[in-house]
Length: 237
Image 1: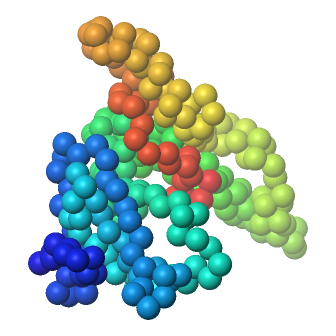
Image 2: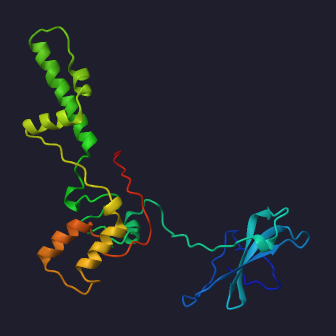
Image 3: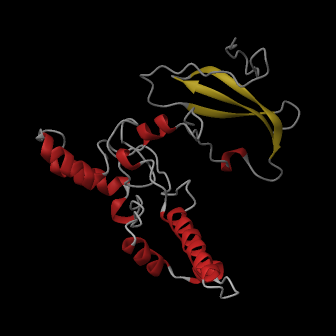
């Protein structure tokens, strides 16, 4: 249970964990006050939370902060909100990016891949498979003609990507290019601005055809972005 402070006493929960600070939703400002040690005013031992000039809660620092020659009046105290979800919670991430949910047409926060192509292998993996196939074919051809050496593996690994892509196209297995990343002109800030322009701030209702077309342009950036995510990929690209 959370104990409300009286006489500037520092309290914690019964389990020793930081207490929940009961702040009404209508509150616009939360004050923070540094609490010093009774025996030494240069040692910070905790924080008080002030709402409407009342102390509603306090946290005891696990390790006291020694100011040494720094004055308490010179310290800038900030209160930052921590989003309470794990970093790999994809559904929560899609809310913070402004996409809304994982069921949108372009659900990935890192790139513009369509939900219908989520199972496609990335470029590097496709080319790795193709190089292995080229190596196997070269080795088989050399063995068939009794040439004595099998340079297929070294030959395939030395081929530049554009040559591998050309071979893949010739045999009917073209390389599917990776979807563009959400960076630069395609970052969430810019794509949502484009969506807001096309929908006139949400006032214009599109036809199904226009919605599909413009959704592909903005990557399902329907809402303003709440948190900035790097356009990195877990596929090793």
